[in-house]
Image 1: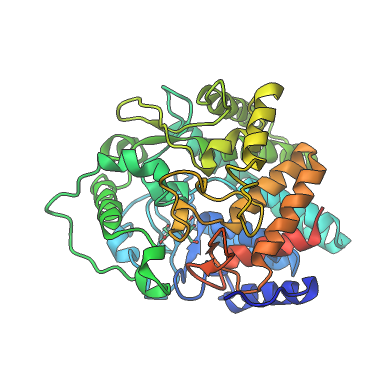
Image 2: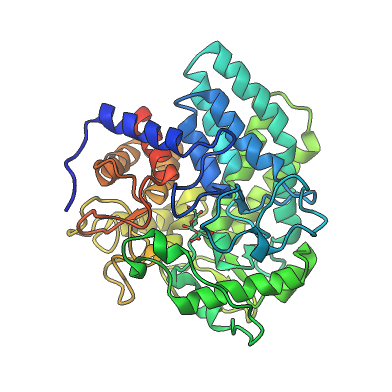
Length: 447
Ligand code: 2M8
């Protein structure tokens, strides 16, 4: 049963309360119960929302994340707080003895999509609409954060840009952020947990009303087995891309990388940073990433597909990630129009039975669609925000507004669900999810 829709003012107040309640001072946890730590890409979206409350606090969020950056440039996917109650925690990751890992924090040993430069640019823009003091704060931070972010992008370009297909390689489904998406079913079929997988007890299923909203036990065995493989390779960047049984060129991450490289290059230009060679690197990586997305796109439909790097197979699974080319402007006009029509048509965001007309994680017409299970069907407000933001950037103002309005419809009960049942709009997974609150604030303040 859905709660009544809140007014924009009340919704904004509630979103701000979620971010404040989840704030430990140095970081905002991804959610209070299910995810009591900092997640890399959540932190970027959270910082975008924080900027509407306090630009200084938004800066602190990214500062905390950057202070956990590994010495080789990788930004880890989790920065752990002292909280217990999440598994796998720092002991299971076993990164304490890894030389690249900074000594003062405990982190996981993999990464997540590189949306941080996109967030930084958004925060600078938000500050510019606020006060002169905020502008100075944001621009000074942008200058300070620029080099660490460049090093992060360089790490991805060096260690993860596949030489064979140009896509960014992920070595664990968690690196995509879309953990149990059907995109990964076939690559995970190669992952066969060994008898020496140390025993473990899942805690995530305790944090939701119905365990069926989470990945299955079988999927968890595979997730934990890959961690074991990476840990045994000491998380060395050259080793993990050969040791993990899961090695996939991820089109969605690659599209985000293209966007983020351009944003970082633009920020250098705007801040008059003297880093010409590095800006040229970023432009080249952006171009390469965009090309790779285009190259891994079906020439008739425009759908983009991941590549299994173990055997070179192109995935045949169509999910939300198939629309990656629209994020980074990778396609010629005709094909782009075709893809946009598909996204907004009855198979996807325009499906007549949807409660809110934004993209579900899997098409309701797909036989594998599961309306309640995590990345296998539900709508994710943060994903809807990403597309609406990209549409706005692309100059598709009307479409950006429509998606903002529909996104707000999705979150309008003020529970800030992690994801939503597409037909009823019921919040699922965690509630008081910080990135949902953050993108709500951005929607309420923009275009
Ligand atoms: C989910 O992933 C974590 C593992 O990283 C989990 O299920 O335990 C994903 O939705 C991911 O994209 C997100 O960053 C994280 C925290 O919100 O939760």
